[in-house]
Length: 335
Image 1 (cartoon, helix red, strand yellow):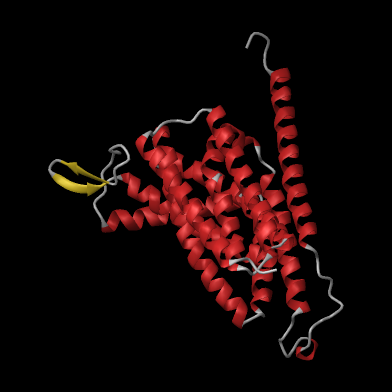
Image 2 (tube, rainbow, N blue to C red; image 1 turned 60 degrees about the vertical axis):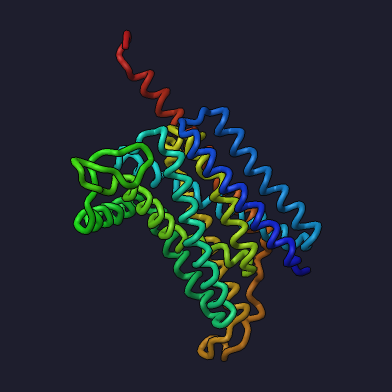
C-alpha cells in the first residue's frame, strides 16, 4: 500500500513546526533541564513516534508502519552511541552546561540536513545500482567488528575533531572564551568567532560520520525515502533530552558498544543476504537471483535490536553495580 503524498507533506510540515518550536524554546529559555523535564520530553517524543506509526498504518498500510517502527528503533539505538561522543565534545570545549541544550539542538538540525542529503543520494543509488547492497553489507560488518574492539572507536572520533579544530584555528580568528550562545563576539575592538562555532561544526561533522554507518543500515529495513527520513527525524528529535536524562549513567554503559556491534553485524549480514536474493552481478550465480537465500523479516530485525540493547544495558548496569559493591567492601573502615 502506497503512502499518500498528502500524508508525507503534512507529516514533514508538522515535524518542522515542532522542531522550530523546540529551537525557539531553547533560545528564549536556556537552562539545565531537570531529570523530570528530560523524562517528560523523551516520553513525549517516543509517544509522538508511536502515534505517527499508528496514523501511518491507517493511511499507508501496516507494513509501512512496521518498517517505520523497526527503522526508528534501529536509528534510535545507534544514535545512543552519538551521546558518548557528544559528552567528549562538551568536555573538550568546556561548553557551559546551560548552553548545551542549544548546542545539541543546532547539531541535530545540522544532522537532519546532512542525513537528508545522504538519503536522497542513497535512494538514487539503490534504484539504479542494486549491487550497492553488497558494499553496504560489507561496510556494516566491518564497522561492527571495529565497534566491538575495546574502547578504540570514540578515541578515533576525538582525533578527527582535534584535526578539525586545528584546521579552523589556522584559518579563522577564534576567541578564547564563550560569549553566551553567540558565535561572533568583539575582543579588544576586533570581531572574532567564539568557540561555539567550532562546537557546532564538530557536532555536525561527528553526526555525519555516524550517518555513514546508520543510513546504509536503515536501507536494509526499507528503501522508501520518506520512511527512512521520518525514522531519522524521530530518532534525533529525542536525542537532546536523552543526553540530559542519562547524564552520568552513560559512563556506566560500558557494554553498549557490544550491543551496537551485534546490531550492525546482523544488519550487515542481512544486507548481504538481500543482495544475493536480488543479485545481478554476472560473476555470482551467473547473474541470476540466489533464490535459496533466506529473506529475514523486519520483525526479526526489530527483535534483534531490542534484545541486543536490553542485554547490553542490563549487563553494563549489573557490572557497574558489582564494582561499586566491591569498592565499598575493600574501602578502609571509616572512609
